[in-house]
Amino acid sequence: MREIVLDTETTGFEPEQGDRIVEIGALELFNHVPTGRTYHQYINPERGMPDEAFGVHGIGPDLLSPARPANPGEITLKDKPVFAKIVDEFRDFIGDSRLVIHNAAFDVKFLNAELRWTNRPLLPKGCAIDTLEIARRRFPGSPASLDALCRRFSIDNTARTLHGALLDSEILAEVYLELIGGKQPDFGLSNSDKTSGQSSSDPLWRPRPRPQALASRLSEKEKAAHAAFVEKLGQEALWIKS
Image 1: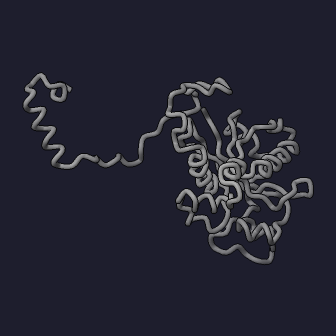
Image 2 (image 1 turned 60 degrees about the horizontal axis):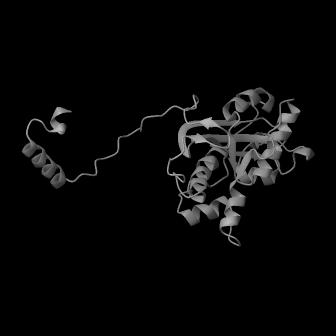
């Protein structure tokens, strides 16, 4: 089962009033496990950046005030591609997979506006799992923001001083797995997604080696006891043959 955890940053709240997407971040899950594949793109909105939006994500100071140069570490958008230049690459990455979004109605509204303006097919109704709705159902009356859920599940979000689409997607992936009951909610008993018919042998997914091997959990005493046990079995012991 392939899912795409996704987040966007925008210039405001209403695409029909001229607001645009300025950043997309997404990562791939396969059977609820991150595969390491990600998509990240800054986008030139071809308009100015309101102070309120700049205060949220810190993107686009050169569009905010041409007279003020960008400070070190700030993201500028003048040299970034417009949405029409990246739309096909973005659609290829998400494919037909279910999206996982926090407050999905907001992001899907913006994505469909950008897709419509570039004459591309819109995302269908029900394309996204909304983690905000899941959190409100599970914890009625409690705060359900991404930061609040990180505190609830003891997820480290100290790097999140400003909103950033890819970082928020990475954090949301951890929150999502906690919301649905952990990294293996179905105990791996199913080989396919019964709702979509998608096989676990999806050719888009490739296993990746761990960047660092896990340390052995055996103590020296346990290793010695095992070696003594094998020695008693003689040369026909399976451990010696292998």
